[in-house]
Image 1 (cartoon, rainbow, N blue to C red):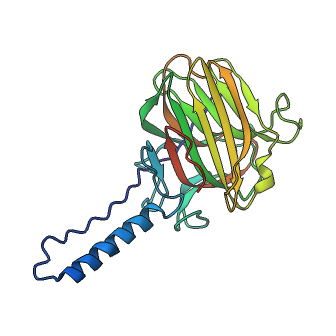
Image 2 (image 1 turned 180 degrees about the horizontal axis):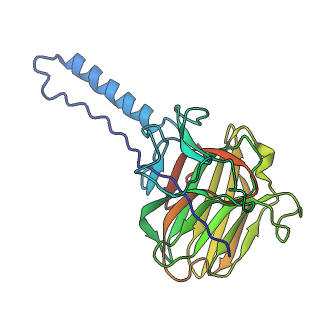
Image 3 (image 1 turned 30 degrees about the vertical axis):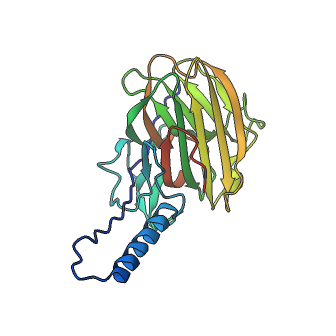
Length: 278
């Protein structure tokens, strides 16, 4: 039985307000100049790039304000020498990102658990759309049964997007591919011909979009710098994308990792429609 966990988030907002009403004695030119500067600053902030939190997003996290992953995230599983935290080693924007490393499987089996979970503060029920965008930097080859997982905390069940060896669905019996699968509710697996390991040691934009319903759609996209083109990994209609209750939690990290794994994650957005990479 596959279980999925993991996650990221932080609502990032920016508002620049310049109150010039109390600048007694200021001449009109000075007031106009100050207002213009504030307007330019606000436009620059709003157009600063993919680290921004778009209007209507449920949450965003660029990991710039955090010193640790808690209390914003719940650490589902973390056993030394595995490591999870905020890092300055690599960053897609700013100077910080989330760093997750699985260094040891405990010596009992080829599995390691290292995950974070974030309650979304909203639910994705029939008729709604879940869209996630994240930038991922992987210095080592990736193969694990979970990366990003949308879950139901109350009633169980989840859907996972990951890079994993799956001989029944990937083109190769030995090489991983990017795929989405449904756990607990009766598995379906949607596989691409793309192996994320072809894009190691660079920031890659990963998008995952699902319309929830009895005949919902599942799609995923991948883009490398300069992020102007997102290659569709898959886009398909699947029966019963939702059964047994609404999804309300997102997770990120590794479950059942095939040996040592490491990745950095940055500029995460969860929204009601596709976010894009720019």
